[in-house]
Amino acid sequence: MNWDQVEGQWKQLSGSVKTEWGKLTDDDLTVAEGNRDKLAGKIQERYGVEKEEADRQIDAWLAKR
Image (tube, rainbow, N blue to C red; front, side, top):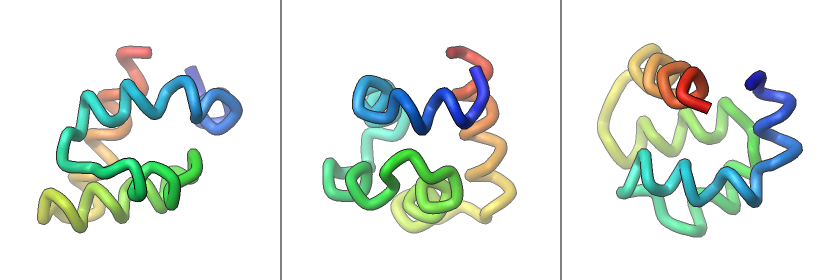
């Protein structure tokens, strides 16, 4: 799955995102709206990780799709 597919299916995938990153709120997911950079920013904010780590986590999640 590529990120364009994630953007197109954001509403369906947001549950999976919330399962993966339980600290993210529904508002965080609404703000992200399928935008990878915004999602990475929210992961950084909630988990206190660097951007590279947030990107790595997103890549790992995406690989499971």
